[in-house]
Image 1: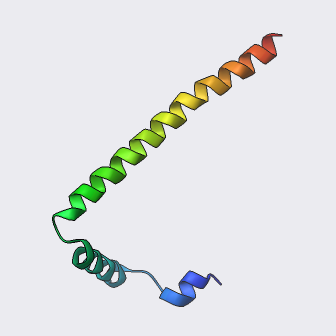
Image 2: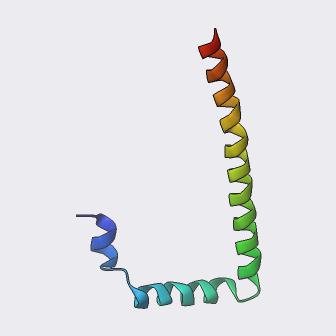
Length: 67
């Protein structure tokens, strides 16, 4: 059995709402959009880096198969 399931029990709507309320109390309503914007830009940069990395790997594989 998963330790998180033992600790939290079943995760449902009441638990999700409780977490949302705690986050609102900790960070406040004005700070959350800034946090989400930072998170979104981080994910966007990660996707771009992963996308840029894939063609470089595939080019190396193509060169190896041509030789």
